[in-house]
Amino acid sequence: MNMKKRRTIKIILTGLFIVFIILLMTTPTHEKFDKWIAKEYRINCEYDYKLGNVCYRDGEKIDFRSSHFRNTGMYAAYEIDYKYESGQIETFRTLGVLGTLFKMKDGYLWRLVNI
Image (cartoon, rainbow, N blue to C red; front, side):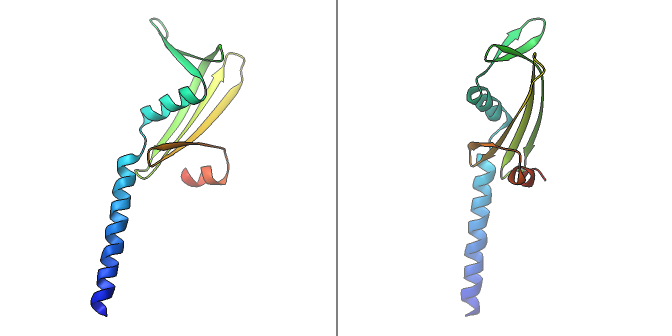
């Protein structure tokens, strides 16, 4: 009986270790988030020799952007704020797990993954 419990515990621990390794290997990178957000929200960036990267959304220039990227190894969370010429500020929140990106809204779940 004791041997059976040890074997069960060993199988469970091995399974958890494999899941952890898979999560580590499939966590999206910062670059993947940037490309996905640009495509998903129709943000186009062009390189200007004097200004560097200049970005637009629906023809309106983005004056300023600020972001927060958190990579825990098992998942990644990315929040980015864009300020447009008109003064409007827009925030995009994205969660990445197992190589997949999901749009998020500010709320309990978002605050939970960003503790």
